[in-house]
Amino acid sequence: MMRTSDSFFALAARARATDIDRYLCALFAPRPARSALFALILFNGEIARVREMVSEPMLGQIRLQWWRETIEKIYAGQTRRHEVTEPLIEAIRTHDLTRGYFDRLIDAREQDLNDAPPKTLAALETYAEESAAPLVSLALESVGVDASEFSDLARHSGIAWALTGQIRAVPHLSIQGRSMLPRNTMCEGGDMAAVITEILDTSRYHVDRARQLRKGLPIAAKRATLQVVLADAYLRRLAANGCDPYHMRAGIGPLHRQLLLIRAAFLGLA
Image 1 (cartoon, rainbow, N blue to C red):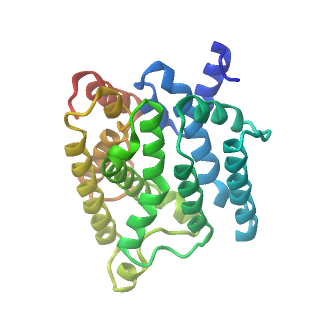
Image 2 (cartoon, rainbow, N blue to C red; image 1 turned 90 degrees about the horizontal axis):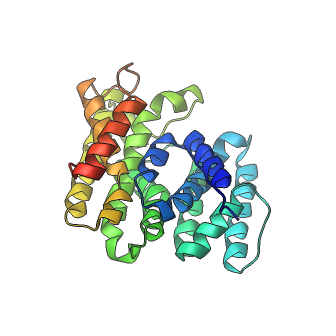
């Protein structure tokens, strides 16, 4: 099991390579929770990249089904050999993580296999919730918080992060000939800037709600939802650059991100 310092640092390095933003947020969690958070990052990375790994939807369905069965086996006390399952098993057993959150994450990724974008902004919001909020709930459980008491926080945090991510992913998806911009808005003649502005405004609403809900929470719960801080920063940067995800200054450098998280985690300024 992942208990030696070498194993921990190897796990951390893999999590960093998989999702640097979530990795940076996890560094501020209590030390006993970090291995679990890194394992969750790896699991999420595995199911999130299924679409890019397969040449046709059926192969993606097979891969997602493999993960469904793997989660089922883990909760039945069995094991399945895979580089992600060992730390994931330890995370689940150490922190008594709720299986339903894993099932929701896997189910949400089925939509990735359909290259047609969501029909409406509401549909995109639903996808954002299902593909991200359960991961926030698992992070809360990993730091010892009863996630069922903070479902609204998980929902708003997850939607804010996922919608912000969809805006930032526009250039990457366009290279693949894909889009997650709502079909009805695009078909009604809305230009990309207007559509992205609408998504940005919706994400901003969820960021603001999450920030309100974070007030007065235990420190562990606040640190498990630090992605709200980064979502806020990304939205501000996008807005300052014309809501253009292609703009060379639409991103935020790693050092700036770390400073934002330090400020939020230790000074409570978030």
